[in-house]
Length: 356
Image 1 (tube, one colour):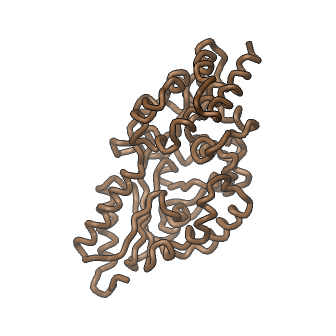
Image 2: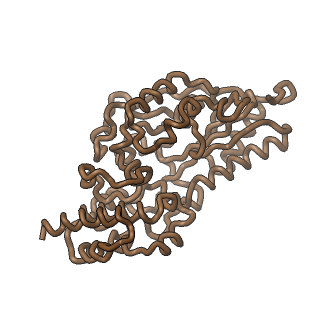
């Protein structure tokens, strides 16, 4: 563990906060590693099977709620947020209301945030080590098993809303989270208090009723899970509820009144790429695997691969208004090399043939 007597920890924290802002982070806070109540909440969630096919959630077990096991020597977690709201994007409600367009979650319209944030966090830690000397740390941006929302709450960045997303009183919920696990015993911040009050707008807004109770999400029903994490066929009984959402879902955030305080993304890499804010479903479904690779490389969407991307769009086309263009796009891929894609195409075509 780093020897604290030779370091002005208050000054180090102030410097971190100042540099974090310069690097594009909206806020920085520090939390201790103890989150026992959140650990119990996680274990109950796993026991209920709400994690679905995300087997890694169960595999990591308690490590997710114990940062000191992930990075031995950790005594503090430096938590940061980075705004991603793409202000120039096509209005979300307009896209959701037009069944001929594909809706992509606002966080994925630009470049992959993982690399952007990891690079900035690593630079933040490196700059501090150059000033105060070496100390132990590990940078985390989604890829490591960390209960980031609980730690961010304890670091004062916001509270966990009834939809299970973090909400900041001055920034809503359209932001990414990242962490630096460290052995520096920095002064901790006061945990954020909750301000959802009696509001439950997010619960009925969920198209698939995935928010089964306040603060309790059944991922198996969540559209973000179904279109991103779920690797097999989308359950038939949930397909119509997906509407035209082809990658992720923002409905619970779109109705949250706190998002009137959302901050526009400052980082240029979060700007819309390839017209994904309002892409026509028939055009997107016409992409070849090579075109998907070329256009989605560098995007968070790239990790789901061409097959799941096609599966998602096939479902959206099944929910789209019937037209010859839609039917032609689907029929063109009836002999797709993927059995899963073919199955979703047939489901979609049956819906349109029934109409015609």
